[in-house]
Every structure is written in structure tokens, then in C-alpha cells.
Image (cartoon, rainbow, N blue to C red; front, side, top):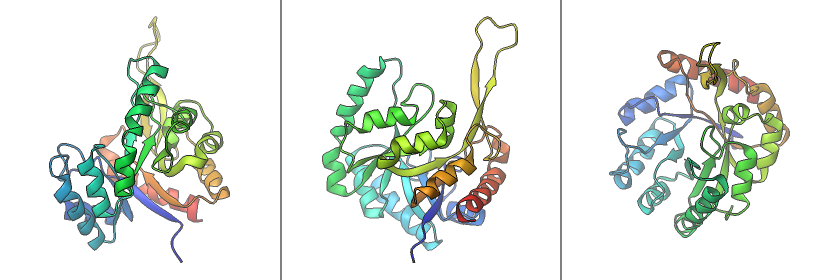
Length: 262
């Protein structure tokens, strides 16, 4: 019987040679990765056609699957994903300082223009909600995706960003359920960065371990299990305490596995 879940980790914190990265990820207990195809990494936008299929072979030799990448949305990258057997290229929908609805209309045009390439190569664009000046929550994702070809463009639901923006996990999952292709798990809470006398208070997220943030992982797991979710569960290894990333990513995987498999 096929396994119901693939537990993956975003390897952004580790710029290791591919064989070392495979061994490192395997030692932590993961069976999949999301790889950042970005400048500074062994697989990058300049060499993606050659190196991404090679990376997939190296990972497979160590029992690791590249479940997704985070990279450019060009033909070379989609073609490399197809050759490497990688189903998803994850992006975030940046709004910036443009009026929201104007920028959403621009994004719809940009993403729709990618559909012929996605169809040709059998790859899906996976859009993640992200706090700050992005499409930030599940309802924002849904509003965007309802105007796109969701055969090829899907939703990545991120528990931490959802919680930072005030949606309960059950509500967020319900909102994007019909478009959902991956679940991202990290956790965070808001910390105050200005003193108590400040006239204009400022806050920022503190990225923490699975148990300590605003997102309730037990509630996330219960809702996904109730809905019979099957697929990738990616722990994104984002922690403000950068010295503890390996330990926290290992401990969080163990905790998440108990929630989903226990």
C-alpha cells in the first residue's frame, strides 16, 4: 500500500553539496525535500536544466524524493522539473505597495500566461499564503485561485502564516480545501519590537518550534486527518534561533509524525 503522507523539509537553511544534503536530511528522518532553486545553491537558475535532474537522482539514491522546488517560473525550470519528476514549483504571490485588487489582477494575468507551459510539462504551480505584503491567508488564496486554471495552479496552505493572519486552522483548510496540493508546517508568534513608550507600536514574527506558536498543530493534524488528506507535509525549517535549526527541525518532525501517524 502506498504511504498516505510524505514528510518533507525545505532545505533553504543548508547550502550543502547534494550528496551531503541527502545524507543530512536522511539523518534527520525526512523522506522528501523542497529544494530552493536560487542563486547560491548548487542547483540554481543558471544550471537548472542540468543540475535539477542530477539532484533528483542523487536524492533518490539516498531514499529522498524532491517533492517540490521553490524556483523561477520559466520554461527551463518547468522542463527540468518534468525531467526530474518533480510535480510542484512553489511560489508566493507578492502584492507589495500596489493596491491589492490591482495587483491581484496583474497576478492572474501573469499566472494564466504560464498555463501552456505547465500543461506542456505536466508541472503545477503551487501558490503559498505568506504574511506581510503577499496574498496572506486562505481566503486571499481562494479569491486568487477561483480566477485561475486550477488544473495547473494549486494552493499551498501554510499553518504559521495562516495563524499570524488570524484564521483558525479548520477555517483556513476548509477555505482552500478544493485547491490544496501541499501543507506547510512551521510556527510563529508576534513579538513587540518597540518599547512600551512608543507612539507607534511595531511587531514582527518570531519563528518558533511546532508546539510554541499561534498555530495549533494538533488541530491542523486532526482537521487534515478528518478530511483524509494525502500528500506532502513539509516542515519548512524556519526558526528565528538559527543556531538550533537542525535540532528543532528534527524534533518537529518527530512531533508531527506522532500527530499524523499516531
